[in-house]
Length: 120
Image 1 (cartoon, rainbow, N blue to C red):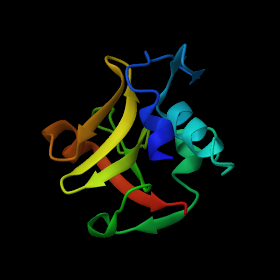
Image 2 (image 1 turned 135 degrees about the horizontal axis):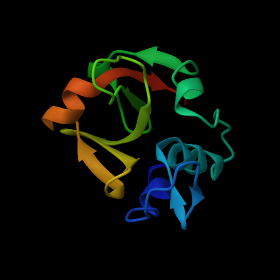
Image 3 (image 1 turned 45 degrees about the vertical axis):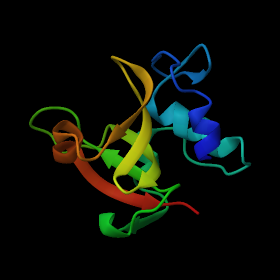
Image 4 (image 1 turned 90 degrees about the vertical axis):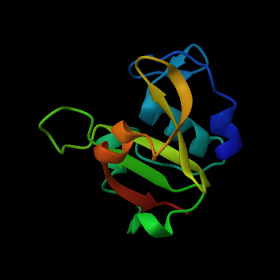
């Protein structure tokens, strides 16, 4: 799934998108897993209720990280796929930069983090 997701690096953000023409955060994850014949729910909210909750310290490549990026809300609205663990980095689609890799060490993502889940 990581290689699948990384093939979309640089693709622009498009709400509801699941192709190289544009994709949103859950579209990227949904597509990367689907290319391995692993079915996930299509939306971030549904993904965040599926799979198995894991402690962030035990996160490994292929796990999903969920975030709440709206001020004053802890409602999950963003998802990323762990691509490396030291430091913890994840690939995701942002509205400002499209599909990129970010680090959980970045202050913004660190404070927005809500939970990690394992689907494999």
